[in-house]
Each structure stands twice: as C-alpha cells, then as structure tokens.
Image (cartoon, rainbow, N blue to C red; front, side, top):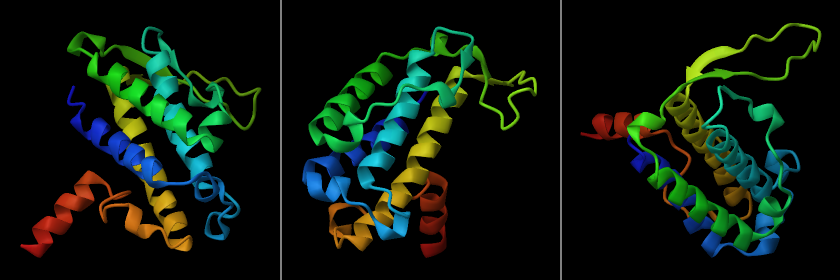
Amino acid sequence: MNIVPHKKVLQDLKDLLIQMDVDSFCHKNKTLFGGSIGEHFRHIIEFYLCCLSQKGTKNVNYDVRQRDKQLEIDIRVGIATIDTLLGRLNQLETRDDKPLIMNNCMENENEKNKGVQTSFFRELIYCMDHCIHHQSLIKIALLEQNLIHFIDPDFGVAFSTQLYRRQCAS
C-alpha cells in the first residue's frame, strides 16, 4: 500500500500544530458552529487510531472508538500522536490487508446491523479521505481566526481535486 498520501496529510496536520498556540487550537469558531480546530483534529486522529487498533480483528467500528479529550486541548499530545501514527503506518506491509466487516451504530438499535464488507487498506483510505474533509473544515476555522497563512493552499483539498486543478491550469 502506498502510505505516502497518508504521511502527507498527517504531516500537514503536524506542521499546522507546530505553528499554533493553545488559544487558537481550542477557540470555539462561529463558522464551525462552536467547534474548535482541536476538536476536528481529535476526530481525525481517533479515526486513524481506531482503524489501526482494529487491524488484527475482523471488524472495524468507528462509532465505538476511544475518545481522548487531550488530543483536542494539548498540542504536544497531538504532535506525539501523529508521530506514533506515522511510525505505525511505516510498518505496514502488503500482507496486512485483510477482509473486514465495517459496523456502525444504527439509529434504530433493534435493527440488525450485519455490517459492510471492506478491507483494512480500504479503511485506511477512508481515514485519509475523512482527514482531508476535516482539514477543509479546519481551513475555514483558520480563515475565521486570520491564521490561513499557517497552511498551504492545498491543505484540505482532495488529491484528485488538486490533480484536476493542475490539468485545468495547463
């Protein structure tokens, strides 16, 4: 599996955190309906952690992930966690891709949830796409706080959209 795109989006987050102060990280942004950059960061990281922690199982369920408040309020914990994730991604091998069933919490808990067939690598790609989506929300918060200069213009933009824009420009 090509982990380079995963490393790129996680490194972009780390580069942002290195520049931020705690007040900006925890600021409740109006444009995010009171959400903070830290909350979105925590959400991104927890999906990666959940996926990687369930690598050896037959199921993945992001709804039952462990939530860690420290990730949304402590920048140093966030940076250290990204470093841990990058190390774990670097250790992945082709044989690590295994079939999984992705489960989630249903609105009607009485409804049987048989899950959806997927694979470990497919779920990692989902985590990356999910990360990019939340980076775009973080970008909106940075704009509100006049901190947009902290990031590259491609932060929060899907790789396919970046490619499309380059093709249109040439």
